[in-house]
Length: 204
Image 1 (cartoon, helix red, strand yellow):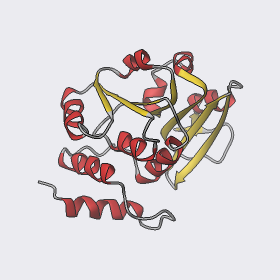
Image 2 (image 1 turned 60 degrees about the vertical axis):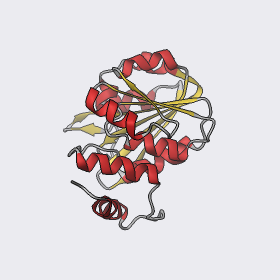
Image 3 (image 1 turned 135 degrees about the horizontal axis):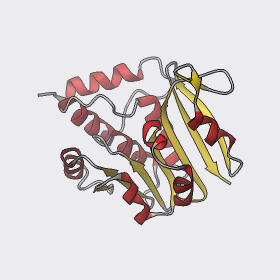
């Protein structure tokens, strides 16, 4: 059994040396606690989470997350988004989906037990958040069609690369090149930690 003390210690460890305040939103702490209890180690990093909350603060309409996990990303989005902005997240694993539904039952986060492609029924979105692995399996044209004009795509779990074109495992990272070169978007690759970068693409 993982208690609140160990969860908060983990959170403090993740924020060590950061310029942002060390306190984490209560929603995020709750989701981190579930992650630790279930041994789920792929949760959104605190550095990425703070960026997500900041970006969500600029969004209206509906924002979406592809792949809920234990709800850490959704918690960061909800913590930053305006109250009137809808947050939708989809998770295909029934245990995770229903666990997060219960956890966020009173927190204005719509958790859907379904493949993330079903999010199309809730489009258009002012922001879509997904990891790079999901983005490699989802055609860019389909993703683009779900975004409002001015809509924002946020992709995480990239390894920082100072060269152009960016590399992945010693080869050109076609996914990053495609989004960074698409003239329908204004895009940037942001290093949020020494070993992690996030791609942000805004539809013109």
